[in-house]
Image (cartoon, rainbow over all chains, first blue to last red; front, side, top):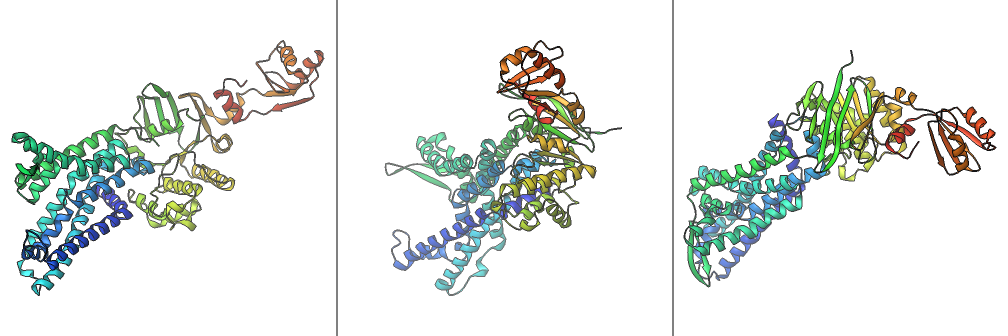
Length: 284
Length: 302
């Protein structure tokens, strides 16, 4: 039964226009940013970064993995996931379809679990889109700058694993929005809450708590964004600027510990959603 | 022996300080159409929500096919089909796709069955159109198709004729009767008394969260006293005069009319004539579900 419900939930998501619009937005944003990067190289106005370095990041193999960073949890990918989850989960309360399905004898934990599992595939699609779009553009840059595509330099197994890890980095944002959608039963609250957290709170936490220094200064590495950065090894840490001075450096966790931290966030949010969902009175 | 399909025992639900349903005992037997009546806010939808495992009862319990049902024990609901208030449909899918999606929950529902239920509710013509283009009546028909899709043994319908035109209402009434003829049990909640009277074998009336009567339609109507309505020139005087007539169980005045319960029209005419108030018009009102319902749910009615 679980796979029947997961399958049906995935159909619901993939038949919705919002997913395809989001993938389009991601592709468009990537094309625009690549275009800007190219104009910097072509114009020779790259400031402190040498044009060769930008060129290197635009071509295979660095361009290929670099493309994935667009889909990372703390970047555009996380925002797209929040929009998708909020729409997919909360709207079903309003439409009454959630109530209809439960009235068919499906257990609540199974239904909610299936709903969350069904979100893994769209999360994977977001990362895959980034890889395909970025990979194609950087392949074109490789042809242009290098005269060919260096297939031999690409570690395909590692690339596959990176796709999985980037997909995983989206899940704490999905789980948070999932929790907000179940608790509030509102699309506006779940999407608004998710975006407010990702855009404002997480950024502010990383900056403000960092200024405290010491132990407090390291709290930023335990928020989902910090954990995702640690796991993805996007960078080893960030400098916090106060009055133009770098006063503290947040050291992100090493990837395994960060991955474990993300798993804990997912379990907490999905577990709390389940507890609330089991107790909810669903109006018909 | 009659099998009980749906039974509630002292079912209650409070929302904070508000008592929505209190001590409701219902018994729905196999193969019958059971009408569930009540004014708006009486507790019908809350009772249905608890029967469908969507609302946690504050007290009491629900059994379907002899097995307990609650939000945490929904398994017996596999044999139940429901149309709840407004139809629950995904607006971005077509009617057919909505049914296909729901069919995945039931191993024995194939395309042929989907076509069959679409035909049954007269929606084949719009099966491929998206729900967001449907009228209220069309959505209601498709919601009905969804309820029937897996050939449930118990069908719970909450206001199934909402948004339908008279012809559509007639079709739904026929459909309900044919479902019962084919062995299904139908629990029909509606505020359309005529509709319920026409198709139901037994009814229950709920008011202020409590069941005020329950039984077969014939029995309940027989138990109602006939009302004689007389038009008189001075209703207040006539009302006063009729109070001395032995056997009168209720009197009410309504404009130029006086309504009397408990005695025959002949005795009323004779009594008023003796008091020099011969009525200009006399009608005997047959007992119907509407009068029964109003009598049970409105204290000001005789």
